[in-house]
Image (cartoon, rainbow, N blue to C red; front, side, top):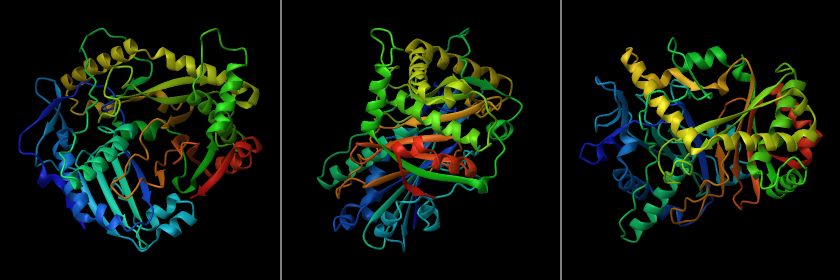
Length: 462
């Protein structure tokens, strides 16, 4: 069963001015899946009718998710609200033959999601340029033993990881409130307001190519790889181990008085050391420096709702030398330099970056380019350097999605981007679950690395 939610939109017309850079910086779909263990309450709290009605209720309070991005004759960019849009949110239901117990036994493998029909593939791939597809899609699979799998995929144009998990959390809260005859609370928005200044400096992290669209940029600059040779694994590393490495960094003598590093800085450095070395040892990439980048949520710096809908992301790039990557003694130094790169992204810098993007969009529209966001990308995709990305989501409400029968027992990211690591918290927040995608030879080298294996345990291999 598939339900087009467009027929349940609120009737009033709403339009939002598009004034944020990263609202359009990543035109791709990113999926996740949350697994709920069998419970007699699932039949009541997560039934078709209950979930459908609660989703309608929460969406009716959130017109932004029905938006369609358009360039106007006056060169402005807006998110148009129109009940006839083809990209309205979609909710789909599915009776699966696989059981929760089987999925759990196999470590909730990523391949089991697609082989059992628990996902919702995007027809023209994750790097789609089409705005005809829904920007938000959900699939609820009722497992054979009473468990439930909730698959969510969103277009990064409107939802980053924080926004998606916050939206699902709000949906779950809305479901519980409706069961108690309470009025649902609408989700907050995270629109970055730009001053539309001219003359703002071009941020080093952004590149523009008006000769081709985003998919062409990606195809031209990404390392040539065989998609059939990609391998995705999930590893677990104890939070206590990262805490220990963090303390060692603080005691290393590298930091000046008053300086500090975060656990995420240290985790990024640890991942960078082992994964870049695995790539080079396996001869997937030549030996040399790498650009290590973090995804930076701009909400706090720019005073936005911390759980707001939107995609206010930025990338923080850190160039790491070959010698630093190959010697484990330099992990502390890399962690410190990652921290210094993050500190450079002040609220003033990010505001200037947004202002530059807004001005550039208008100039591109003036030149006849109707979808300027499809011609801009982060320099992390530069083919002249090897790149490794790390997104730490330990402060995001990944497990805060109780529809009335309990929180999800496990969450998996289904990204399949090479050399991009997503670190999700464990259900008890006592470990990080590292979702790693590498080319086959590099993954083999990583799994043979004693230093990696001494701290990381394999959860599932797809």
